[in-house]
Image 1 (tube, one colour):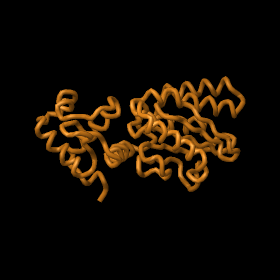
Image 2 (tube, one colour):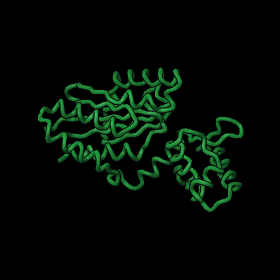
Image 3 (spheres, rainbow, N blue to C red):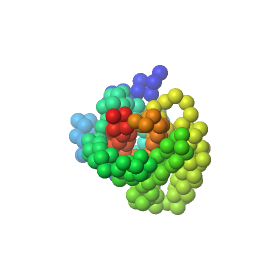
Image 4 (spheres, rainbow, N blue to C red):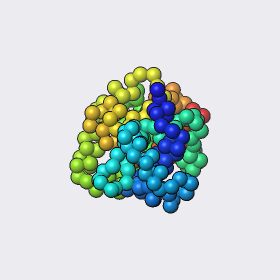
Length: 242
């Protein structure tokens, strides 16, 4: 049985709204907030009952008594899988696409171009972006400053965990890129990096016009903007293949 088959259509709707709102506001989401914001045509009492069922099934958790709910790894995975049901090619970021096209016209040096791409993705994304020319073992990192403005990074323990994860990712990048895939997403405990349980990692591999393999990874809180990042990754793939 798939995760999607475990809950009802109404529970799916409520879970999707909770994940989206938590991504936007970084605060536990309560039933009254859902009712006022989304006009779901469901009473707050019924929403509370469904939220409790989703909690019992492991899609949500309640950080404090009488507090709202926060998505678990399982809740984020449900949300991401529902997004990807539309097909990865359906995600696109036109502004990013046009900006990288303009950069491509201005910069002839390939290494400088890939470095600028990394910076541009980090500007559009809320995550740390790592780009790697696999065959040449060249790696760029961009996005620290913007990422550290996110609420999660107000906790020293979280910052330390993230820095440790980045260091491990750099060391293990070649192992992560092994295998035949174009796109992978790891959420929390799914991460092959042991220290990355509090983060999500998106990895894509593409072939450049020069027949070189470039990998791009976006690492950030599990509360990352998945649709936005999917759009950046897919738009980049289309640019590199043309």
